[in-house]
Image (cartoon, rainbow, N blue to C red; front, side, top):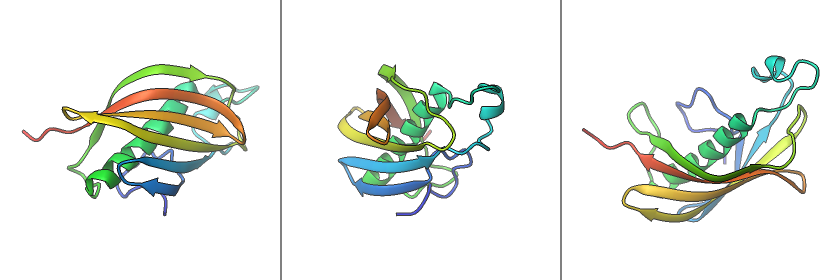
Length: 139
C-alpha cells in the first residue's frame, strides 16, 4: 500500500505495509533528522517526543478505521482520537530509527473503536498504548 491517505497534512505514517480490514494494520515511519520537532527536543541529543509516537500510532489506527468502514478520507470525514489508556514508553526514538507501527482493532461499541497499538524499532518495543477513536457525528 502507499503512504498516508490524501488530505492528511501532518502525516506520521510513511507507508502501510499490511492492512486487514476489521483486524489489524502494520505501517512504517522513517524518523529523519529533519523532523520539525528535533531542533527543540533536544538540541544536544535529538529524541522523538512521546506525544509524536502516540500520534503516529493514532494515525495508524485511524487508517485502519477508514479501511474497515470503506470510507475514503476527505475534508468532511474524520475519526477523532478520544482516549488513551496504558501508554508506556520503553526506549528513546532517535533520528535514523524506523518505527514499525501496529494497531489491532479490539472492539467497536456505541461508535467508539478501541485499538491496542505498539511501536517498535527493530526487535525492541519503544511504546505501546490502548487508544480509542470515534467517527465524527454528522449534525
